[in-house]
Structures are given as structure tokens and as C-alpha cells.
Amino acid sequence: MSSLLKSQFLLNPKITFLNFGSFGACPKPIFDDYQQWQRLLEFEPVQYIAVEGVNYLKASREALAGYINCNADDLVYVPNPTFAINIIAKNLDLKAGDEILSTDLEYGAMDRTWDYYCDKVGARYVKQHIALPLTTKEAILEQFWKGYSSKTKAIFISQITSSTALILPVKEICDMAKERGLMTIVDGAHVPAHIPLDIQELQVDVYTGACHKWMMTPKGCTFLYVKREMQHLFDPLVVSWGYKSAAPSHSQFLDYHQMQGTRDFSAFLTVPKAIEFMQQNNWWQVAADCRKLAHSNYQRFCALLGSVPLAPITEEFLGQMCSTPIKTTQPEKLQRHLFEHYNIEIPVMRHGQHIFLRYSINAFNSQEDMDRLYDALQEIKASTGLIDVA
Image (tube, rainbow, N blue to C red):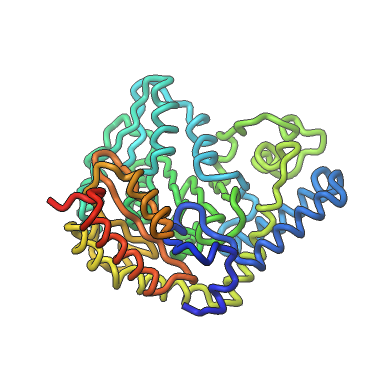
């Protein structure tokens, strides 16, 4: 990767950072923009929050809407995707016996969210099994819809899964859900700036995506999209000045969710700068180079760890992240060992009965980083007992 791009990131140069997928990392121009917004907040807090805040947010939403192809008034900013899905799950008016159809590959916080709201009313969160490794798109669709029943009220699915780092056929699933009259809810936490996102093409009812991951904004910046005709269904998690507003706007959805009192929404306002940064640096080419690096090393790590890739090594199923099944009874200890002894930041994650080591690649990574990880794992496997060799 370009050394110039690597120098743009604020990451500790002593750390081999292979965990962009968890929180992202913010380049200097975007972080500088963030701090300028924060300074403006402190310069005149009342004007920033109570007077100009709506206009600042509008400009940011309009930039984001152009990037993901939707109407800016159908977007609100929230801290993270779990917050967004809590808004949706709390308001779905689930009844005893209703079912939410999902997969067994979803992010743990989302599983807990759906379990919580389903358990409260006696509804059921169906985690339909998707066999690994993936083989074909058609096989995924067939397996997923085996979980459908007359009680299914909505589908919830990740476009890119977290611990397994797999791209799922969300467009096809949403199309089939529409044919069955189901609400479609998509967790796109890893999608914006990772793979192309076109909300209008997806024709999804609800979509949430993190800007602080692959779009590289400061932490705590996520969007929630809700189709216009469904926005009235979703009350905010916190009732504030937008309810029975003294100066209502043209959108109850924005009034309810956008202004939540005293909070620093500066991270939300950096989205235009993030888009500008990506445009200036030909980011889709950067992403393509990152995918190539991620994919070209995948089989090598699987061979070292005695496993197989979780999907065909193609852009249909894999982006800038790859997860390798790993045999260890101490994943947390292994993760800390890699960090403390080798200065490698990489997650080793439990998912059900399985454990995955997931590397994620961005502009600052190189083959040297992958070799450093490989050598570390080889040494750990030979000497520590943290990786099972049987």
C-alpha cells in the first residue's frame, strides 16, 4: 500500500493493526475536521446545538444520502448499529408467537437485542443455520428460507457478517422477503466504503451502517435508514424535544430521532469530509488492493491452522476481511498473547461453538504485516499450547 496513505492514519506505528473491522481508524484530515467541529461547539455551544445543529446535520445527511443513494430525510444518525436495531426491535409491536427470521451468523449484540424483545412478549428469534463453508448463493437462500413460517413477521440479516466476515446475498433475500410480505431489516455495519452500497437498489425497509468502520469517521457515527412509509412506526429510544415539537419540521422521523438534547454530534458531521477523503484518494481502488491482499493470504492461513476457507475466495463472498477457523480453548488469552508479545492487534472471536481469527485489511496494511502474523502464529503453535495442533 502507499506509504503516503499509511502516514495519514493516527495508528500506533509499533502495532501491526489487523483489526480495522472492529472500530475502523480515522485518517488525519477527517480527525482534524472532527476537532474543528468540536472547537466550534465549545466556541458557541448554544448556537452549535440549539440553532445551527439542524442545518449542520442536514448537510451531513445529504452528503451521506448521495453516497449510498437514498433520500437524506430517510436517514438519522445514531451512535452504533446496535442502537439503531434497538429502535427497530422495541417498536415492532411483536406478539406472542411472532417470529423474526435471521441466521446463526449474526453479531452477538444484535442476537441479544432480538432475544430481549422477543422474550418479553413470547415471540421467537429464529437463528436459521447456514452451513459453513458457504458454497453457492443458491444454497444460502435455500437454507435461509427453511426457517420461514406463517408466523414470520420480518427478516433480519447482516450484509457482511462480523465474526465470519462473509458477504451474504442480501439483495436476493430482500426480494424474496418482499414477495412474502415481510419487513426487511439489514445490518450493514461493515458495508459503507467496504463494498458498494445502493439503498434504492436493495429496496430494503430498514438498513443500518456504521460510518466509523470502513468510512473512517470518528467513533460513534452510524446511520439508520427507514423507508418513508414505515417511519411512523418507530418512536425514539429517548423521548425528547422532537415529540410535540414547538417548531415541528417537515419530518416527524427527523424530529423524533435527530435532536436528543445535550450531546456532542460532531462525529456525525465528519461524513462529508470522509467522503471527500475517499474521493481524493481513489478509495475504490484502495479497497480493491486491500481485497487482493486479504484474499491472496487466506488459504495460507487456513493451511497453517488446519482449517479451510469459510467460502470460495471470490469477491462474491469476501471483502477486505477473512476469518479463519482456529482450534484453541483459550481464544481470549491467544488474542492478548498476540498483542502483548508480538504487537499484533487482531480479534480471536467465539461464535457459538466455533472460534475464528479474523484479519481485516486497509490502506496501511502490507504483505509484511501478513507475514508478521503468519510467523507469530507459527511460533505460538509450536511453543505455547495456545493453538491446538491435533
